[in-house]
Length: 293
Image (cartoon, rainbow, N blue to C red; front, side, top):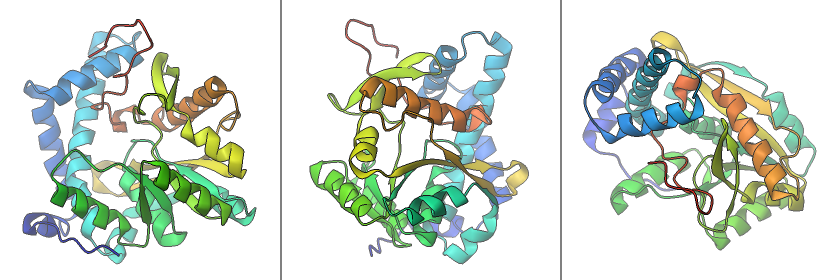
């Protein structure tokens, strides 16, 4: 197990009460909303694309709320990444639908946990690694190598296995499913050229991974969506496990991609402000279509 140590300041931050972390995050979010910056610009563009019928004032409120939630996500990360599990577990106030995971694993064909960038997705991975063990694809952040190693160490500290987003890593996923184990995938990143199919995400064509339906088709694994809702006033989190839409394992890439994005939308819709709207989800466009950012 990797043991990279975080900077002292982040180790101290990991022990702050969650309400304090969220207060700091709220202040950061308001700065994002008030001052010109790329997070505000990208969030504005994404929200206007995905909610075109919303009045300008409603969109402005949603953008502010989304930036505040982004600030909270940044500030709560030290607790999730570097605290002992005994300090993280009490933050989980409720878990709904977990029987889907148990039933899928009992069937013997493995299970695929799909965690969109909604709420605190890091907590989903940590919870699943503690209770079931999990093998997940890992794309290192675009930061210095030492920071990427710290992030990886944090995610693996409870026994998760992170594998690279290459042929070797994908082979590891198939092997884990063949053993009837749990694997994890973040479904809403922009896949590399040739690894995606366009399907609507809140009505906007989005380059959507084709790996997931291939995994399902070859393994017979059950797909389960999961997300960690951030509760108000720093009260903790509510973990939600949801069944995947019909068609997510279809050999038709367009059908599968549409089902995958419908599953992400089902996670986002209850709390749209908690989605990571600061990501350029629509960076890749269909042939002949102009860029959106």
